[in-house]
Image (tube, rainbow, N blue to C red; front, top):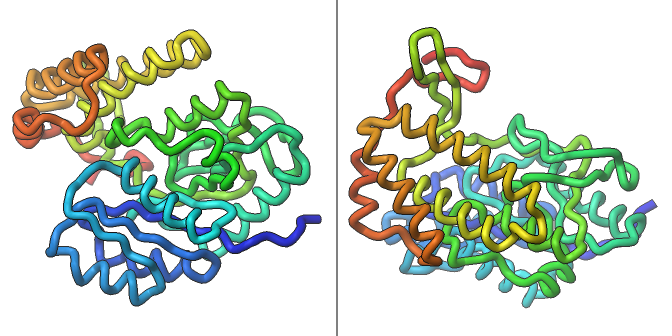
Length: 316
């Protein structure tokens, strides 16, 4: 039996969003107060933001692109200042079901009633086709989560106040992982709500021919993202190596293997390798913030080889 709850808020971080943003706002606004944060999209997106406002969102515009973490921080602070007891975070490509907010809010109520330790966040059990759950249930319909993704995450007010905001110096990539690691190493629980899913695109899937008879199907990102992924992985690993060595080594190993595959699938390979090496170097130096402009130009020239496939492996 869950008790009464206050109306949550939802924050959507956006950059040059699609026209479908208004549809996302309309779905969320049935059960949430919605804050849309524009991360420097420019005047070309004015009509999209006007439609989002008409659909029920409070829209916060910024002239400068400062990254998803900064955008989410601005939105969450706005929501908490307006009295929200808990805040959802979304990106502009999120596709929550009509009952997503209700299911997740019920999960938070159960967690507060049934779990003695502090709850930092709740995520849906599935993000796209990827499970975010692990282990046995700690309470009805709730288990521990691992490797969480911020879109669809529900953060209680008390967790945000105690743990602090997202690392906006990361700019983009591993922002959610750092928040998860920070919570866990401070003794908070990060939970998954059983039976709840968040449909979402995880980027392009391509099938790469690495050698005669050896093919790999993997997701690929926009090339500039590999700078942030590499840099932030180093920074994250150095921050948590002593407190969570097994997790840090495991995650770093997975990323290094992924970088190798990505380089093999890139054209020209040396350009993506250069981007990743520069990211690793920035991480070791502790140079944070935005990708250098010259490196952005290099990333613009990278293309992917191989055959683009759907999630079920069908080429198209």
